[in-house]
Each structure stands twice: as C-alpha cells, then as structure tokens.
Length: 185
Length: 185
DNA sequence: CAGGTTTCGTATCGATCAATATGGATAATT
DNA sequence: AATTATCCATATTGATCGATACGAAACCTG
Image (cartoon, chains in turn yellow, blue, orange, cyan):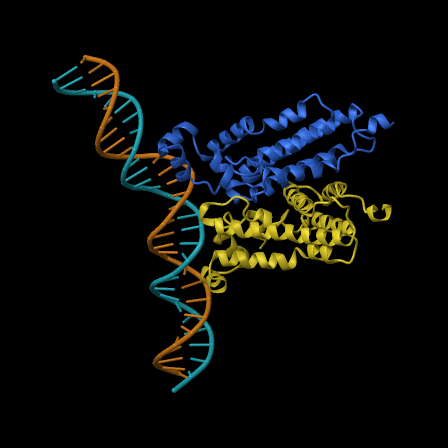
C-alpha cells in the first residue's frame, strides 16, 4: 500500500512489491491474482485504515462548521504523517494514467467523487438543520471542500508540514458562512 | 504536449508520441535528443502558451484581491478548456513517479513551488501597498491559493465544468480578507 | 524407511519500453 | 547518364514489464 501510495499504480513495479513484501512472484500471484487486484486490495485497506478521520468528522454530532473543520484538520494531519507517503492515495494513485490503466484511474476518480458526495451529504444535513444560510449551495461548497482537500494532498506531497497544512485548512474554513447565522436571524 | 498533459510523463510512450506527431523514431530523437528532453520542451511550451493568465493576473495593476480573483478565475477557464486535457500539466505530469523518473517529478514540483512563490510575491506587494490587514500571513495565504489551484486542477480532471470551477474559485476568494480594510482604518 | 505428492523458489516467457543500427531510396555531382 | 553520397523509414537492440512454467526440496502416506 505504501509503495502504491508513494509511486502510484503504474510506476510501482512488481519487483518493488516483491522486495517490499519479501515474497516470490508466484506467492504474490497466488495471494492477489494479479497487480490490479493487489492494487484494489491496497485501496480498500487504505480506505479502512487511513481515512477514518473523514468518516469520523462527517458523522460526529457537532455543528456543520465544526464537522468541516475536523475534516480539514484531519486531512492536514493524515496527509503529512512523517512515517507515511505524503498526500492521499486516492489522488496520487493514478492521476494520470496510460490507456491500459484507464480502469484504475476511473476507480480512483470514483473514490474522489464519493468523498465529495459524502461532504455534500453532510452539508445538506446541515442546511436542513438550519446551520447554513438560505442561499447556500451544497454542491458548490462540497466541490470547494473536496478541491481544497485535493490541493492539500498535493501540497503535502510537495513537502508541506502538518502546521502549514493546518494553516491552509483554517484559511479554507474562512470561506464558509459564519456559524452564528442561526442566532442572528 | 497534449499527450504528456493527458497521460503524464511516464505513461506516455514514444509510440503514442510518434503516432501523434507523425514522425519516425529517428526523427524524434534527432529533433529532441530523448524523451526527457522532449518532455522538458513540452513543459516550457506549456508555460509559454497555456499559463499566461497567471502572469497576467499577478502583474496587472489592480488591487490585490482583484489580482487573486483574476488568477483563480483564469485557472477555472484554463483548466477546463474542452479542446484541452483537464487540469494543469504541472500537476498531472508526474504527481507520482517511479524512482527512475524522480528527476522529472522534482522538476514539476519546482514549477509548482515557483507558482506559489509568485503568488506570495504578489501578496507581499499587496501588503506593502496596504491592501491587506496587519496580521496577514503572506506565506500562509500563498500556500492556500496555490493549494486551491492544485485542487481545481484535480476537479477539472474529474470532469468539473468551467462554471463549477468558477464557483469553486469564488468560494475560495471568500477566505481572503475584505478589500475595504484600508478605507475602514 | 521408501514412494508419491505437493509445495515453492528460480528461471524464463512474450510483450513493450526507450533508443539505435542498417539497408534502400532519393538527390547531388561528375 | 553513371556514380557517389546523403538521408530516412524499417527492423532490431538490450532492458524491464507483468505473469508463468519448470525443477528441487520438503512432507505426508503407506
């Protein structure tokens, strides 16, 4: 998973995986069928072990703005762990791919779209609860938040520290309408 | 250039380039030395022909907030031209690379860093001119703006339309301190 | 303890990569 | 017009890709 995370799907060779796992080629193919299946296994593992902060943030019983704040700050921390490759596997895994790997690129795109949809769902819940003003565009802000997270992933890959990403996250938060909207009315 | 933009450095094979340019292998090597040199030529060409909006926005004699607004809206348009690959070549070219292509990945990272530095320079000029409040962090906001643009590049690659990117850009703009700061004082 | 079977590592497969050598066609010169 | 020189497309090179076939070693059974 770390190799795919660091180098992406296509640039990670079986020789690298073999050495990292200490396995012989037949052992790999017995265990994972082929490279594509192995990558998909790495994707689900990544989703289960590294992305918990997002589900936690979006499902926590807190006001909408606080949920988004936790989401962005969680990403700042998750994308810059010193012991892990920088950024997000869903972004780094196959942003650009050869025609043969289009299926992999599409799958990663689906993961990213699902993340955006989850954000939109949380924002919609917030609007229903009155956390957000009238003219608030759920889809527009979801695309903004997802975009900021993708951008943080690239900044992390370029060496941004957790403090720098936290500042970025808090700056991005300023674009959200103020929390007091409900009380002001 | 379009092939590298679409598929990235490593996933673009010489066979694809050969067919696209209608050249035979020796013609390519006579003209461009090798694949890496060809890619670097594509990078400079991209910089000269596709990224003008950024230099224009940052050098225009307008208030700081307007300059950033032009930068983000220019990116929204440049990243989603229907006749071009989505996003920015500096992001898609080699976000994740094999160890052999590390030099290429580093060069693209340098381009991204240079973009961020150009934004920081413009913000510093704005602070000197009084466009921005006292506690304003030039580096922090530059990293935010650069991150948002990188995120827009990924959203564009995932199919976002120019309208959606424009909304994202305007949302991102809301995080900037208000322009009236100077007059209020 | 011997025979048969299963398992597992090495060596290799065809395909494709980036890059180049070679042979034929064209053009220039005598 | 004959010959030489130049150029250029095809065919090929070594290396590496993902994936697999073969041979040896270990283990269980009789």
